[in-house]
Length: 220
View 1: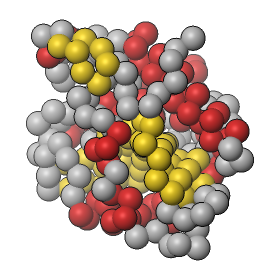
View 2 (view 1 turned 120 degrees about the vertical axis):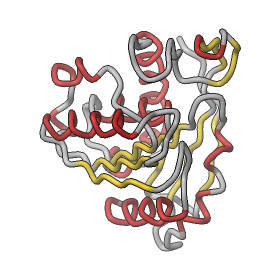
View 3 (view 1 turned 60 degrees about the vertical axis):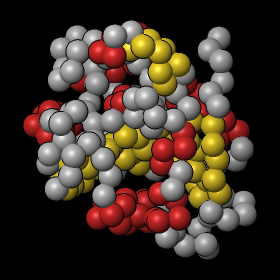
View 4 (view 1 turned 30 degrees about the vertical axis):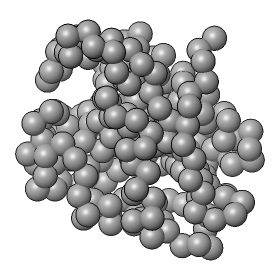
């Protein structure tokens, strides 16, 4: 049994009726996106619980086997072989967090999965295979992992899930064309993708934060 993840929680008001589980990127931690919560300017009348988990520590091949927070291993930059076992383990960890929220009384259709880079790959992997309908998924500066297995494994319950994808035009870690290919693979399977491009590198910008806020308000 995998150990439960350490999480940072922020509630925008008492008794939240919705939750956003937000996964950080490689080498970062749960504090990475904490400052974004007040910037979203969500209405006090609709309190939301934000959950920012810390990824487990693991050796990462592209960083010479150095141990750091990572959702899965990366063997080489720019694609190639994927750490399928690691990706599926991380999916299981995220499913545990979803169960924790439903156990606190938040229904599946009020849970949003969000993630940046590696975290974004895991939220796409998980949301599209989830057997209960979620509120939506936000995949930031990322790509679709294990794309060849999605058609066989995807859940009908989330076939029309709102998907927000955002990417920097000058991303030097995950090139824009890799993200665009992921978007096209999703569109080919009939998913609806709200796609945004920004003049930035592998990061987040104020325009993107405004678009995220609008997406969250639309689905919650």
